[in-house]
Amino acid sequence: MIGTPIVGNPIKSKIILIGQAPGIREGDLQRPFAWTAGKNMFKWFSSIGVNEEEFRKKVYMSAVCRCYPGKNSSGTGDRVPTKVEIKKCSKWLDFEIKTLKPKLIIPVGKLAISQFIRFEKLNDVVGKQIKYKSKNNNFNLICLPHPSGLSTWYKKDPGKSLLKAALNLIEKDKFWQLTINK
Image: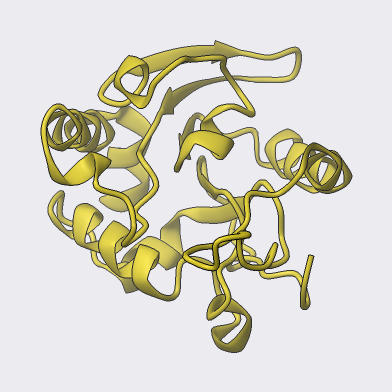
């Protein structure tokens, strides 16, 4: 993996958003979801009443891996971190979850979602609220697709409708309302 670790603001929140890994531009900008995927994702959140600045102040942002994984072999996107890279980085995410004891986790994209549950297709998990129980904490999972500019899943149905359903669930979540409306 390349570059220094990229992390979100060190805030105490009952909500954690978890991405896959930073993209190539996030290293320069020193914050997660700072480029194309972030622009798409923050449009989604603005549709439920929270802008990027407010989101970054109130929601803890994390990632499965903290450094840029490099380009994929075709050169058209970022490489998915390997199982070894994920395992090496897992202690950081585990620590954040154990420390913050979130009540809502929003995993963004297949890799982040797969850290919590097994599933076949995004259609199986996006647009649903999943009660998750771990030995240290219980929380709700509301999964989102990856907002990559290369992805078409969330731009057409059923992805488009499932994304809207997921955002509606987030907006109605008790801990979202307590955190965002504070």
